[in-house]
Image (cartoon, rainbow, N blue to C red; front, side):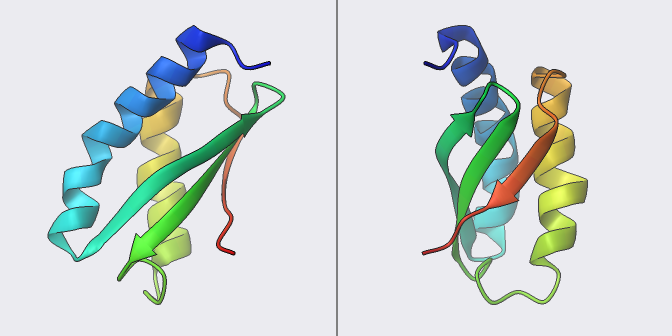
Length: 80
């Protein structure tokens, strides 16, 4: 079971970065948090086919999430 405080902090981080993604025609949604260490996200819109989406995931999304939730070790994209 996920920590409700951790979930709130991750959602806050995503809300902070979301406008930048939306400005480029993309978006992001939280899929879940695994073992209170790994955040799984779903990239949407133009983020799906963007050639730099992994860089955005690491340099933008992961960095922002770790700012709010330093216990997070990794952010991964799960697009099914």
